Image (cartoon, rainbow, N blue to C red):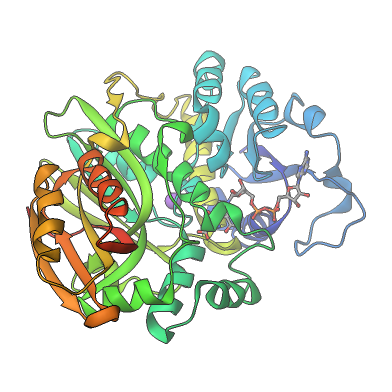
Length: 431
Ligand SMILES: NC(=O)c1ccc[n+]([C@@H]2O[C@H](COP(=O)([O-])OP(=O)(O)OC[C@H]3O[C@@H](n4cnc5c(N)ncnc54)[C@H](O)[C@@H]3O)[C@@H](O)[C@H]2O)c1
Ligand SMILES: N[C@@H](CCO)C(=O)O
Ligand code: NA
């Protein structure tokens, strides 16, 4: 059988593992596809660089554009990352009818429209399982296995670096900066950890998940995003004392009337009994809730060269099979065209700690502010007394707009010395 020729763009952490697996699993892959997969070219930035992968130097080129448009290439694997030149290269390949496998969450979340359009007009496949939650099969289950169901919510931990940091803070009492340093020493966090700790990485993944789950185009700009840099050891301890753990969550949910969706990434307290609370270290886990299927949970490694390459290889086999069968995978599905509602319309609960004066009438006045904003209080307790008094309140569900207006008013009150902490509470059935 004539081999299918594969061009690889980028030979870094993920790319070098793709090369290894293509070599090591060559016979099995050929049997599964029905034709050998031949690595026919590898685009790199610098030819002379030492790399982890054992690549025939004759395959290396710095001219990625010439490689993706070469007549003999059937499939392009893009593991360069970033918007450009990745987008132009993918579009150029698909315009020539080549199938593309990409791990590029940044591109798919920022400008998925362009690459999906190019796939359709070129009659090409575009698969991107590795872009969200690395090795965990999640996008194809949403795109294919759940195509007959009605997904109502996707909720999960989709960034390994921040989960590692929060887990260390929870288990050892470490500060954010100490836990970040440890994550960097272990190679989880990059030298510039902004994309992870500020939630950009998780927001890109949330946009991709929401788009697939709700058949609607969602971009990174539509996602409400808050990172974890402001979380203190005291926040973590306070959550612990109340039976909660703090996680950076990505939440994509339909509104109650089903006419819009909310997509958000922010730290939240979840009960320690919630299955996501047990997701430790750099693992990822995602809950998908669908009307007929009920609750599904996906768990595993969301990052790392080999786990991510596993997802790339799975896509490679799928697009190779499609080519041999003369068929294509599903087009982008955005027919539902739901509106993405602003964060203020999201219904959630707040955990609020206030530094207050310990004297008669303070609790009543604080409670009145909540009532004035139509926010109902679920629990309240006082910690310490005298000058050290803190009130800790947990609200019932209310709109995020009403909750944040409540906090704004509290900040302006003379009896409130400081709003010490405000965090959303998720993951339980409390109304
Ligand atoms: N590393 C992970 O755990 C992981 C997990 C999921 C998804 N991803 C995604 O996979 C992609 C690759 O990530 P990575 O960790 O391998 O990054 P990396 O930085 O290790 O590798 C990228 C490589 O591409 C090369 N490159 C950049 N521009 C190029 C160009 N114009 N032509 C040829 N080569 C070029 C770089 O020199 C580098 O070697 C990114 O989109 C990333 O978001 C990575
Ligand atoms: N930086 C990401 C891995 C790539 O998606 C994480 O920490 O999960
Ligand atoms: Na995945």
